[in-house]
Length: 286
Image (cartoon, rainbow, N blue to C red; front, side):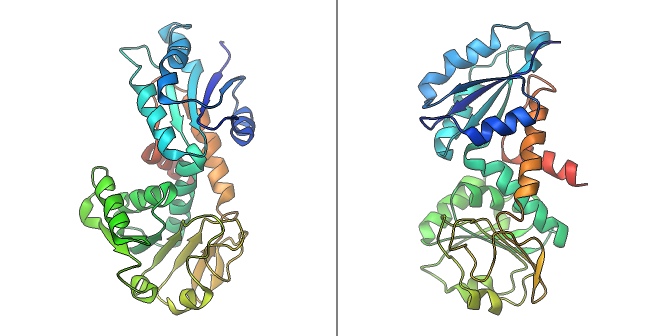
């Protein structure tokens, strides 16, 4: 049987060691690692993966897109899929900065605590992980407040997500419009996906949000995103709310990451972005 070859396209100057170790643990036999990749570089790299094996063997070659810049990674994904035609294609996974696997793990953790359909959810942080968490929650039928510091930023995120989920389930909220207490009023699900090392919710504000059933903080760097939380929290009960820290959902994130990498070598036509990665995680969790 041909060896499983993973072509790693990383937008950072040095390809991620984390992603390489995870790929090896997931069963990749060989890694071809490229750093500093731009969209203009993608075609010859992907063509090299596509044209060296016959269609019946292409499931043993796949592409992983990583790096710290998610927007740049999305550009690589578009460029890579634009290279495919007919049976000449390879499977590809986008997980720049862990955006898809982290968001999937957070939403799966929330779904373990309560039914998400119809649940009132708040996602604080309009960056890549926050956007994907909001997308996945809305995809499950939750009513999602997408919170950013500025109302126009929150509105732009909701407009972008409207092409992927029911726009009626998304409500943009700017912290320049409403105080945090009003934003959290009646919320059952909270996912804090703010910048690293920034407390976005103080301990007192969290304690006053007495309707919360589950709260997930995805910031591991001190100070954590929700005051009073620990990065290692895993379903810790605080006033009837199941609380998770970044490391607390990290085990699930790693399982999803490995499973998604393994999925790449099952066929040559998988394109794994947020929804597809979440589906893999949910299937594992059932």
